[in-house]
Amino acid sequence: MQHTNLGRSGLTVSRLVLGTMNFGPHTTESDSFSIMDSAIDSGINFFDTANVYGGDRKGHTEEIVGNWFTESGRRDEVVLATKVYGQTAEHPNGKGVSAKQIRFAVEESLRRLQTDHIDLYQMHHIDRSTPWEELWQAMDVLVAQGKILYVGSSNFAGWHLAQANEAASRRHSYGLISEQSKYSLITRDIELEVLPAAQAYGIGVISWSPLEGGLLGGVLAKAESGRRSKPRVRERIESLRPQLEQWEQLCADLGHGPGDVALAWQHTRPGITGPIVGPRTMDQLDGARRALDINLDESTLARIDEIFPGPGGPAPEAYAW
Image (tube, one colour):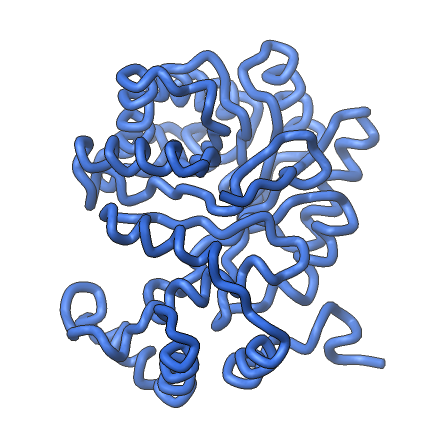
């Protein structure tokens, strides 16, 4: 397993991130335990969850992870990341990142996770109604109490990253060390502003949906069942069919599965700490691990860019002189 520092911090994390969103809604607790056992045994030490994961039973995913900590006794081996923002209560202060909600949400996550601290506490989305000063005051209190160690973000624009870390700097706070962004060969928008801002501020980027909802995982060769049978998904497949045909042929020529190559490509991207893999089964976890053994040469990377062109580099060079 490959490991690296998360952003500018001294925190060492695996270059594959175990996403847990399927635990509960699609994967039983027993199977989830087996996946976490196998992940940690293979060196995947970075586990990502959120306080709203669990399908109709929000928080259930955190409960499953917490039950595994208690049963396995391996909490100290894991870099645990969870999130705050989503609606967790029906009253007006039941969502967002106000000081009140942060204080409530962290206690609930700690209870469900059966731990005394969260290694990386992430804002699941930008909260346009909460001042940065209030946010950092609340986070600094949690750090001082030992309930969280680091702060991260998710779904932030590049200028949000700059605002957040400049506000933290004014308070002499450490600021954000990570950002979770949607990033795949099909969705490369973050190359314009988010990745350059993150690199400038020493923020490690964790990519979610690296297989674009399964479209990069060999979708054309798979049966039209499950999620792929939905009309909206079928329409998107058809709109991307020329690119997907070229993509799957390239991967076949390389002798690797399309999903494995898509994950391997992530590790070639400057500023990317690692992609989140959210396995429903052990086979899917095994496939993700194979990506670390794939080396993509310059000619292959150039061909990938021909199939899935990015925005042309960072802004403003991508669109101006």
